[in-house]
Image (tube, rainbow, N blue to C red; front, top):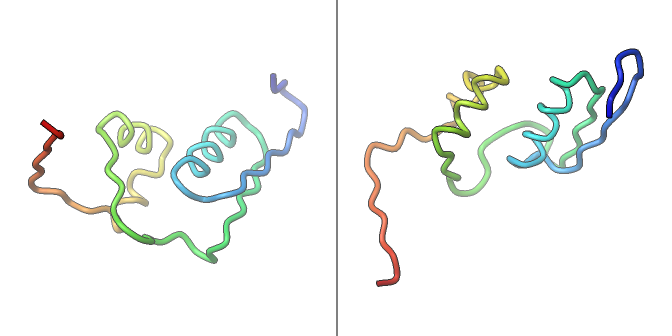
Length: 84
């Protein structure tokens, strides 16, 4: 458990959704965070990843929702099928 007055450092390897979420959560808790990824800047790579509304709310609560908007897809319609 992190205690006030200690300078705990966390290194997160991988800047994907999981790595970024971990880094943000640790920083909010007061840890010094180093995030390491193979790409030099944050950008959209590959296909879209859908985030449910609860995930999106968490990004806004953490203060990064507005930063995600320029690279987010604005889905107007979706159809879901199952194997049946």
